[in-house]
Length: 363
Ligand code: PMV
Image 1 (cartoon, rainbow, N blue to C red):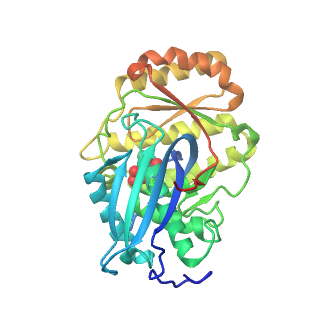
Image 2: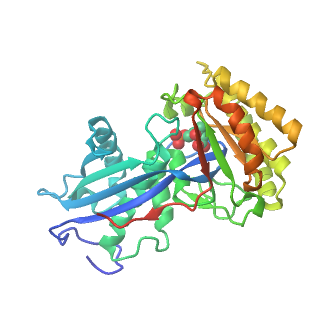
Image 3: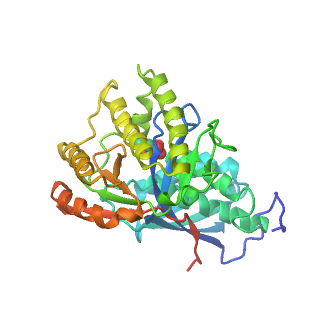
């Protein structure tokens, strides 16, 4: 391995192999990515908050293949169990990114992964899982190059590799608020990788809470790839992409000034527009549950009565993400309590904006 060199050889991988270990969180989009161009590029820019408590820990160990050049080959264990369906998906993903890592064709990878949240918790694991894996792949490359993980360009590459696995995963490689997709109001923004927000948001948003009301913990009714595909030829596609761009500009201004009313209006408009797209798709999908609508009505009622700073967003599913600033924690606790009976087994996952991925010492 040559210090700081872009080219390197896998011949001198030590007998015990090389390994990398990362913890990477999930994220929730406030401006939604829904619809893609080719090559996993987004049809519009999106913005998300990186979460804290919902994360994946992944360890990747690399050893040299007996027949270098025939790889990559990977074995995948999820929470201690060999998982063949996941192994096959991961092998397909690794082959698709092999041209981005000089070492990959020469190695055998042993991948172990686990989530901080239960499998059927209604939290998508693709963002945390794919970002953790991409960070490990980039950290191994850094070791080959004799560089530090985190050197200039490291996170950009990790983000673009994560994107190839799952679009929204590219936003999880940074903490706080991140933007993915080219947008005139975000300097340095790119369709290929996410960037951290280019300014410090108003302190109102610094400890933003996300209480996830689990209405249904089941599998997604529509896979992401089918969902994004519904936007091809969708009668409202162009208006939707324009709306997302305008909403992003408005949200950035609200994040800067600390205007909760504007923030809430835009965030809710984005969530319901995402679901409206699915209602108007051919074939259509209704992803909300009757209880999702009941909860939304209760949130609105509570807000009218108390003027509390609280709003909601949804992913492509029935669960409600209740967003509120830290200062509202006590008041919103009474709202959450009153909404538990509409949730599956009274389930609520309390999360908040987080600091982003961390490199761990491998064991
Ligand atoms: O990353 P994907 O392909 O699973 O798509 C995610 C789409 C939404 O979660 C609905 C919105 C988003 O921007 O995260």
